[in-house]
Structure formats: C-alpha cells, structure tokens
Image (cartoon, rainbow, N blue to C red; front, side):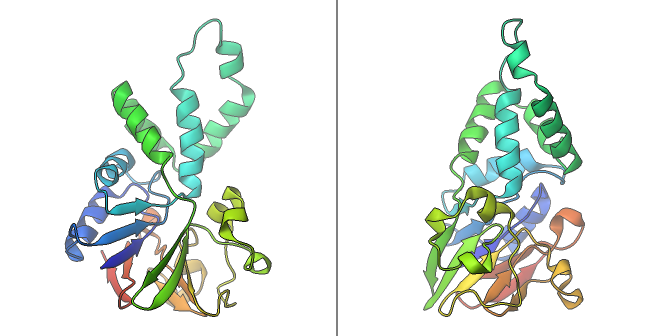
Length: 232
C-alpha cells in the first residue's frame, strides 16, 4: 500500500501512532511531503526514525530548506580567522526568522547530538526529493510540499524552482491536471475552508493533507490505493 502524510512538525509520537494505525510494514511505502522539522518537541528523533526506513520517502518542505542551510552554517567551528565571515548580520537575521517559525526545537535537538550524528542527519536532509510523480491503483498523483502556480501547471516540475515547489500555495478551487491529482502539504486545510479544519481536503483534483498537526490539530494520512483517510 502507498501512504502520504505531511507537516508532522516534530510530533514524533503522532507519527509513531500513525504508523501503528495504518499497520505500516516493509511491504508499504510512505511519502512524507516535507515540514518534518520545527514547532513540535522531537523533530530530530522523527528525522532519525525516518532515515532508518528505506520505504519512507521524504520530500522537501520549506522548513527543511531553511533548517538545512542554517544548521550547516552553525556546525562550522568559529575561529578568530573565520569569525568575521561566518557570523554575519544576514545569518543572525535568518536564525531569528527561523526561530520565530518554530526552529527552536530543531536547534535544541541538533545541539544535543554528537557531531557525527548531526552530519548524518544533515546528509539525510540533502536526500529529500523536490517532488514525486506516482501511479497507484490506476490513478496518477503529483506530490509536492507547497504547490505550483496555476499558470505554470504545464511547465515540467523539473523546471520549477525549489522555492516555488516548497512555498507556493495552490488555488484549491482550480483543477490543475485533467488526469492526475495534485497532492500537497504546506497549507493547513483549515485555511481552505472551515469544514476542512483538521481533515484532509479532496476536491477539484486536489488532495491537501496538512491537517494542522504543527498547531495542535490532528495528523492526517491518506492511502492512495483507495483514498482511505486516517487521523491521530
């Protein structure tokens, strides 16, 4: 079976509970559409668990993009020789913005790891895919964390910028593809329509699966084989 979830945001226990609920096995595949990190209490534990599972396929979210760059810069040893180039106003402003968006838990988690484990998780972040296209149960699915502008829907995903793929918010009232579903995270379904709060949104060829777990709402997961929804 093929499953998709997104925007777990450090809620490791919810993630484990979901794996148990769907009876996730080695014969299944789970796609996680980004924003594994930040906000919740255990982002590094979640990231580490995912890295051990060959059948969990991670896609890049805007929080991974931000964290990966900053964590690598913060892992550089500061010396008298490089302090001026390493500690910049731009870096400090970026760290402040990251922390305001929930980065404190990720930063704290990385600080508690030995250097070799930090490096291993940073290398794992580099493996996150920008998008994926699947055929499951006779249906075609386009998976991406954020989305693409409607006017760019015919532009190959390989030609879309990472910033677009991770941060754009689709128009959920417009059908993007005639013969495929666009599956996205990033936009909590609460903002798509009040009736969708805490639930997966399906409509107009869209499947939006950020149910707001990062803000105290349920974590959602959908099985693409039969469109069955799961919540914890």
